[in-house]
Image (cartoon, rainbow, N blue to C red; front, side, top):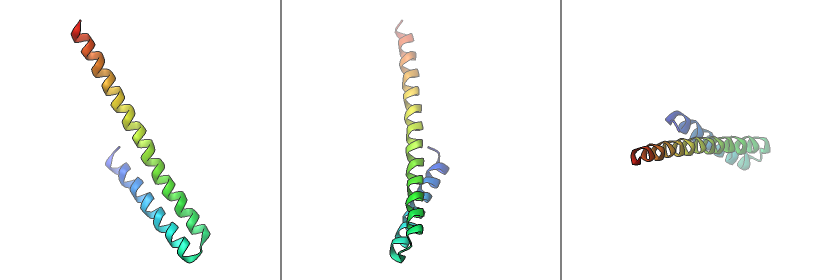
Length: 73
C-alpha cells in the first residue's frame, strides 16, 4: 500500500468519523449517514490495499520457492 493510498484511506476514516459524530450531536441524520459512508469508504480502501499487498507477498514467495527448487536440481 503506497503512502498516498494510506493517507487517503486514513483521511476518509477520520473525516467520516467526524461527520458521523457531528450528525449525531446535531440530530442531522443525513450528515451522520454521509459520515458512516465515508468511514466505510476508508475502511474499504484499506481492505483492498491489504489484499493487494498479500497477493504481492504470495507471488514473491512463490517465485522464491520456484527459484529454490531450481537450485536443488
